[in-house]
Length: 527
Ligand SMILES: NC(=O)C1=CN([C@@H]2O[C@H](COP(=O)(O)OP(=O)(O)OC[C@H]3O[C@@H](n4cnc5c(N)ncnc54)[C@H](OP(=O)(O)O)[C@@H]3O)[C@@H](O)[C@H]2O)C=CC1
Ligand SMILES: CC(C)=CCC[C@@H](C)[C@H]1CC[C@H]2C3=CC=C4C[C@@H](O)CC[C@]4(C)[C@H]3CC[C@]12C
Image (tube, rainbow, N blue to C red; front, top):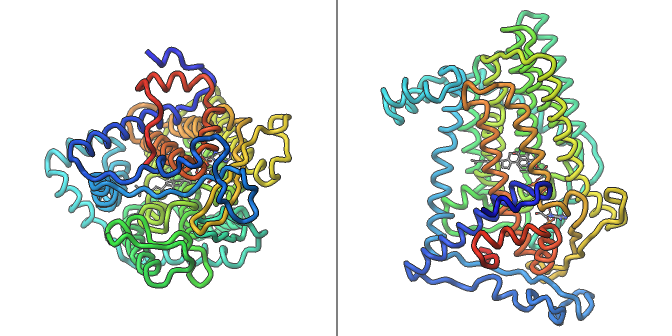
């Protein structure tokens, strides 16, 4: 089979999975369309033939001081066929909006009430009472709105908001939007993170002195998740109306389908009283609550069992990862979460609730499953985890460095191999982006995802193999990053056209041959 021929070093698992995924989806969608004889409007590649032929003779109509012969990737629109519309704009949003909040509550319930065993959840609850009755009884057993959850959630949100507004930081610019706006940020993520963790340590000390503990969050985590769910669903509703009637920038629109608009959002960069909503939900709330939970669960484990090295590995690696994230936070502003995902249910509810419930679930599980790994295994996992974080960070930084220096830097001690991709945005302006084709980005398109997976595995495997529960985050990451690889490839192809193909060829090398074997054809049209 084709797998035998893969060069064993030059592969990103994400890329291979995404390629398979893309081809299967493309073939199925095309077959469906043909069967149903639905209208299929304008393939984006056809429209872009002017630039996609790669002869260098297109782009003659370019504007804005760009040389006449320069090839410009033109923006294209893809109109969905109705099966695509039903799948992407009705079924998916409906499924995620209704199932995700229940999934998060079930994760917590399984961890804390079913000894971390999905089999137990299935046999003792689903089989006996049915799925719906189980869900109704879990939701009604938790007191969602009470003074504790209100004070905790609003108290923390206010604290995070004040830090976002008051802590100083250098000015940072995000990538130009399709409407030509350049979002401006205050790069204060690392300072806010350090202040939050130091405040948490001080608060823990104070509470302990007075016979209390922040581990009450663990004891009442079900209520907290329930309340977070309700508040976040309401916040998404407010954001839906804000984007529709009072947008902050021109990067807003509605589709006329309220379900999809609620799910996806109506605005790319909403600001409320000058506060960037996505920086708040993604970074100051979601990505900061996660380390707080990791520390609280580690403390709970210490209160119950004393020092446990499995919890130590899990906590240390996650804290190392958060520190890396906040150090690099300005780079996060150039990712698809910020550039493409609007402030709707997917990203905002996701960051407010899903991160706490799912991303925090590994540590939550470890509280009741202490394991003594021994010095050898502890050292091995710490080494693998730390190296993976370094590789992941290094790859992210290579991309940032080459763009910040306009290509005037060294990548692995050599002049970087770069492609200067010219593309036109919706308002007609021509922009240029640098695509790095050497360093980690020359090995494969998402080499850093391999490091992300290895790291997640290193902090999950201390839970050993008694249950699937400690691997739910890892499994989610396999799915998310494979899909993301596919999404990003589609996005970059549509944005950079032949420049992207040039980069794909450079980064693929001999692997193209293998991918051809998958279907014996050239890549399908991108949606
Ligand atoms: N734990 C988790 O849940 C997740 C973690 N992550 C981590 O977050 C980090 C960011 O990942 P992700 O958001 O997926 O984004 P990427 O780091 O993959 O960046 C994608 C963007 O970078 C630009 N780009 C793509 N190829 C090149 C190139 N060769 N040279 C220069 N720029 C390029 C494009 O943007 P442009 O339009 O500007 O050209 C593209 O959209 C990673 O470390 C990843 O592991 C990511 C997702 C989930
Ligand atoms: C089912 C549902 C609604 C899911 C929501 C998913 C989001 C919570 C995640 C989607 C992408 C995730 C992230 C992207 C990149 C990141 C950089 C990394 O260094 C830290 C983690 C993260 C911010 C991560 C966080 C969760 C998502 C936003």
